[in-house]
Image 1 (cartoon, rainbow, N blue to C red):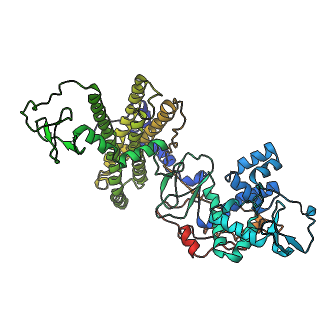
Image 2 (image 1 turned 30 degrees about the horizontal axis):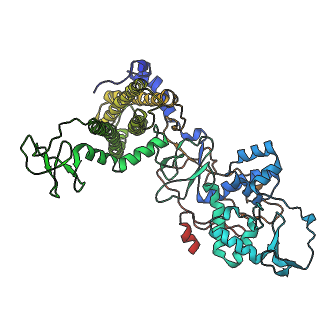
Image 3 (image 1 turned 120 degrees about the vertical axis):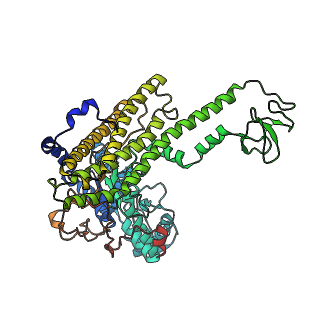
Length: 597
């Protein structure tokens, strides 16, 4: 196979064993550096830590604004759990504007002069004892029966996260403790549904937190601290794009990948093939394929028609002419339409064939992982000078990552240099120049990937010391070359291709030499006073959602140095976290199943 090392990268590669000991080991140590040495930008939120993650944000808002928990939750739901945005509004517009915009009203009880034993409910117009009436924070007071009916309707309609006061044009949000207490007396199932909606609002309404799209669902959610345009690996092992929740697809943008998926799974290209190779019968309108040299074609319905123009004819004909029919006039539009359909089909076939070829190669190479690891085990048992074979597993990981990049690069090229998305963004001349630039880098990467695959399949467990060292140098050199070429391809896409476009809707996840980032385990940052047991957030009473602190794994590791294995699923803990009236439900179960039970 030809050598695909580029001239400008000659200095990165080594030809002797001594050079490899001095230089390549540094590359290996950098490539194999554990992810735990760097703080992860993404975190896994399990069923056990979901409540703790929610309450951590609640605590921050409560401490800053000196408010109760249900007021903090109302503010956070309104601002989609974006604490920084909430604080920015507070600094710029003040507390009153912050509260009024979110529907939070603080009623001063000293102005409540209602001390009569009987009070009238303005909804049902009944005189009831004072203890059967309930006042909200906005100051409006109605009977418990009317409030309960109002809450029941709102929860059944899916409005339980922000239930407003019954008073006309009052935008105040009702106290969740009052909602829970009143509804649970009549409909305990609805009270549990209300609690579940409040708990899941941390994920459903939070732009920084999304459910893992695994099937069946693993019960985990992922929180992205900084960059929402990233690819992440959940602790269940699934790798996905955080932006669109599809499989990891860089260097394709989310829109490109969605269009490519649709194009590959629907019948659009089948229709193109039918357009190119068949003609519609003028009688039954079914597509007919020509299987002979004669231009008179007979459909299964019995209708004869001319293959050249598609017009209905009689059955009398010779090899050259059809009786009573002439279609020698040139029709420009129909010919152009057929030529364009054929050109589009050929172009799609070119890119799809290479996309699928690399995808299939990746699947086959994944099956070879066990075989290669067996070779490593055999080599370690032999009496060789070389004892460390981590360069094999490192090269294998690099091969899988580069295969994935290569596969998706063909889907990217199909849309980047086609006329479907960027027809008005580039002239044909500029498109051709950029296409050649990209394809040059793509071919260099492809050549080095194939060569890396070839060396990894060598029976190095049967080689002598000298030949094993040569294989080692080649694999490490190719691993470094492939990583460098992947970086350059991403830089070309981000700067020269997508960066020059006026429409900024096509962004891609950044390239990572160590692969897709594994999300770290989430642990709440508790203070020393709450290290043993989580205390109620509201010191003034009347709060909800108090729970015991989730137990950490043995070793008490922090989120910065705890990375779950991608090949193992976290065992589910039995039981639930119970507070005053809240039970953390099993989020793996469908909502209607939980409601019924």
